[in-house]
Image (tube, rainbow, N blue to C red):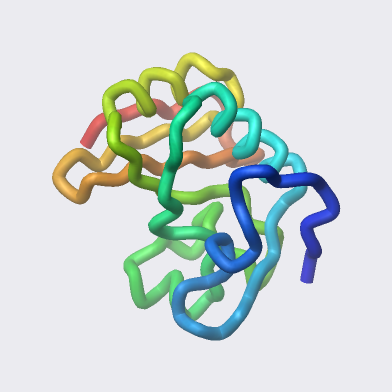
Length: 127
């Protein structure tokens, strides 16, 4: 599994580890650099609600087989988060140029940030 080889001022390994209890942690380093850069742009705290996921946890939460959250078969390139100003966070994520997937799930109160290298163009949406 990948270790964090970069300085992450606002995130730690525990909050980015799979939530099922398996202890799996495997993130793409470029994605983590982008996540930290976004946190600087956002300029206020964000709570990671869904970090990397093992295959079983991804299935349990309804994730697709090709989910960028998956961290067991490849380094993860997505997180979901919550913060106090979701509209501002969504706007800044879309304008930042750091992610090609930004989805605000209003009813569930979280934003998905993803870097899908198999996708052409941006996918920005409010559900």
